[in-house]
Image 1: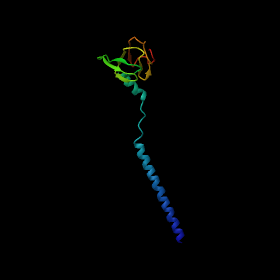
Image 2: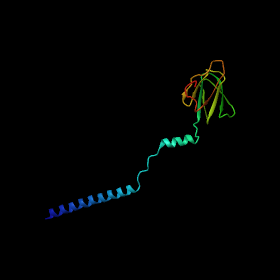
Image 3: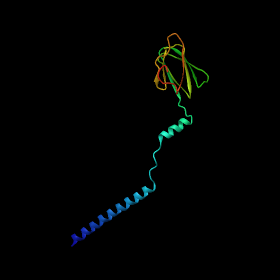
Image 4: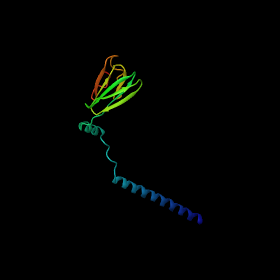
Length: 142
């Protein structure tokens, strides 16, 4: 008779555990239904709003000298800034809308604008200058 009682107790325990799991699952389902996941964001719309608001991307220029050269930078039509670079020396510059780069001698420095390599622009012995903006064609010479 003891064996029969233990089986009934085991069955009661299993039924109690199963009922508890079902109640917890139901409670979790009800709570989850009250706070549904937020709607996915429309990234296209957010990007166009930023563009319409006039948010400009900066113009970034990197200059690395192949040989000694004087570099003049005019950022956003501000005052000219002059730098002397030695061989293999480099500097980077940033502007909000436009940046003008002048090299005392063309072909004396590698110029990279917004990540696009423009190589060694200009002719040896002749000063070189170019104005860049973010809207410009990123290809060299464009």
